[in-house]
Image 1: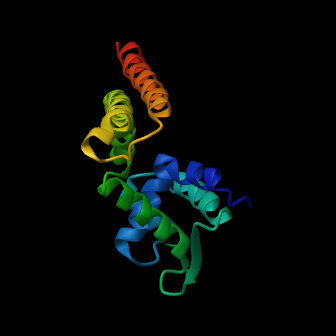
Image 2: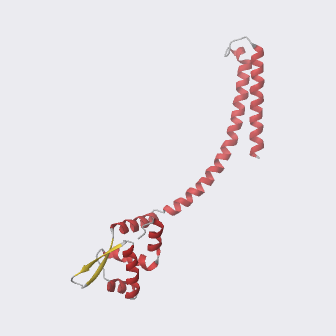
Length: 174
């Protein structure tokens, strides 16, 4: 017996087996082959064939019922938990949430692109303003006086970087 998740899902995804499991869960008691066949309007041999598969994979259990003089079938706690989890997943729209997460990711990418372009412009402006502060900061007592050649070179360097960043933002933004 293989309890690989894919195989278990394959087993319970077959329509008749899924109906059998749902019926047993809804009744909340052991059901005989005859009761299951009658409830589902299926042939007893068909129901029996599916019950054997469900037994093989330990998705149901059986017990001899003295009163009925027949075997009764009941879902295991694993199967009950599995079916409840699947039903809960569909009730809470997990599937549609996953789809909307994908849509959200695409939207986020677009928004990030739009945000990234202005931020590079802002960074360029910051470099230019910083260059002006260094070049002319000594006139308003922000920076001590002296070494004016170094300040001019730093100003030019920051100005070039700022202009480059603004230009780069515009060419990549198209």
